[in-house]
Amino acid sequence: MKSSDLKGFRTFNIEKYRFMAKRYAQVLTIRYNLKREYITLGIPVFLAICIILAGVLTGHGFATKEISGQGSEMNSRKDAYEKFLEEMAAQEAAERGEAVQPTAPVPKAEDETDKAKDDLDHIMVYALLIAIIPYSFDSYMQKKLLKRKEVAFSEFLYKLSELMRGGIDPVKGVVTLSRTTELGAIAPNVQEAASAMLLGSSFEDAMHRMARSINSKLVSKYINIVVQAAYTGGNVADLLFRTSEDMRVVIAIDKDKEANLKQYIVIFYLAQGIIIALTYILSTSLLPLIQGVGLEMLGGNNELSDINFERGFFHMIILNALFGGLIVGMITEGEIKHGLKHSAVLVALSYIACITLILSAGSGAVYNISLVSGEGQQAIGGLPLQEPLVFNVTDMSGNPAPGVYVQMSISPSGIVSSAMTEKDGTVTITPTVGEEPGTYVVTATAGNSLATATIEVIG
Image 1 (tube, helix red, strand yellow):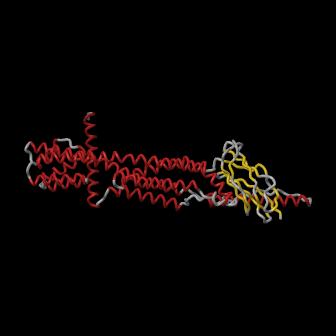
Image 2 (image 1 turned 60 degrees about the vertical axis):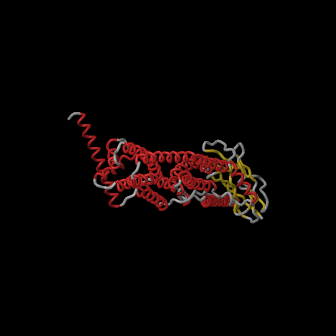
Image 3 (image 1 turned 90 degrees about the vertical axis):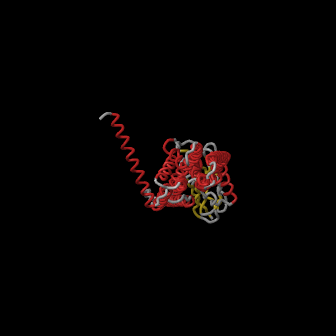
């Protein structure tokens, strides 16, 4: 077999399988009344719901800084208290002249809070993108195809008017155009209408069937004009020519309107970027200062600093991107479904920005904090410590970390203010203990790293 024959055979097979696939798709569509939305929207939404349910069932949840922070802080306080009791017991035994065997460290069970998976909001973002991207892409492509069909239909009217000027009737003109002329995007629709006319359908039925297959309100309106003109008689060719010109003018006006409304798309995209930038500034610069001032005004209460502002900002930005994109589509294109493509783009870009800037700004995994001095002091209830507590904050490479917000808390009661680290990475505080005698624990938190200091309060 020659190479040319082999190539022709392969082309024939490809066309054969393509025709079979198209035929089966038509059979399924007619028999089960399948719509594009079942594939482009129904299946992705179902997959998104399954992903969210799987995340919930496998233990994923929302990040709660309050719960995780309090759990880690309570563990640190418990460790510090046990360490203090061991030191007191060793001191008493030494005074009695008894030998004390060092207590072997007991391996701790893994904290349940460490097992918690707090990324359900991230999973929901992925599921949202999976749900809306196929439908938004399909809607965008269908709209582009519809615009091409409308332009091609105006050209079809012009060519039909030229044929009718030559004395050809509308039915024969449609059949001739379907065979001999390049009709662009509406070629299959015109060929279907021509086949229906050859099989005995009236001009009116065939043209209305073509209008339904194109599925354009603009085309349907002008097809009605064509049908009425064909039945009323007169100078139909001139009427079709003026109709094609009028349709071109309407299409041009729609294009100008969309071009003028595109400025709102740019404005909203810029507004979303400004929101992200302002949120980043709040998370890295202003928010730590506000939290510190709030702690002082609340008398050392750490409720304000326990609020996970970064996650709140993250949720706000994603929701603003989602609904803002829908609003942009409604304003610029007249339908909410055309805003899904803007929502998908804005949500994806906003998510990347939040992961890179905002959530990383609130994460403390890159810091280590340790107590430098002030451990084991004795103090009188209700008074500040005689010597300050000094903590040192470093990055993962061991270098000093200046300008890092360090959250302070004291239990069971007392007053302590959070602070920012100095140029050498140290932070110095002088807490005021409560009036009740006992062991007090000061906890310093830099990101997710904790350090504690114990204080013995005497009456």
